[in-house]
Image (tube, rainbow, N blue to C red; front, side, top):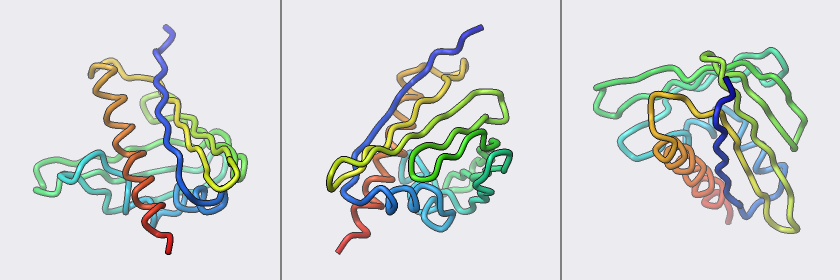
Length: 140
C-alpha cells in the first residue's frame, strides 16, 4: 500500500551550514523539536550516519504523556539531505537548499493512518516553525 506523503517547509535567515548544524545537533534539537509550548523534547540521541539511530524523547510538560520518536538514518548527504526510516516503517526526508542569504528546509514524510493528514501537516509544520524561530533567534 502506498502511503500519502506530506511536505512542510520553512526558510531560515542563516547559511546552509548553520541550518544543517541546528537541525542535526542534539543540543539544538532539544530547543525546537516540539509542536507547541505544552510539549518539550528533553533528550535527543543522534548517530548521524547511514544505519545510525535517531531518538527524540517527546514529553508533555505536565508529565501526562511522553514517547520516543525513533528512526534509523537511511541517507546522509552533508548539508543537503537526510533521510530516516521511522520505527513504524514510514519514511522522512529533509532537504536543505541555500538561496543567497537564506536556507530553505523542506521535510517530506509518509503520513500515518491514525490521525487526519491536516493534523499531521500542522504538527510537523509547527515543529519546523519552532526550528525557524530557534535558528533565526540565534543571530545577532
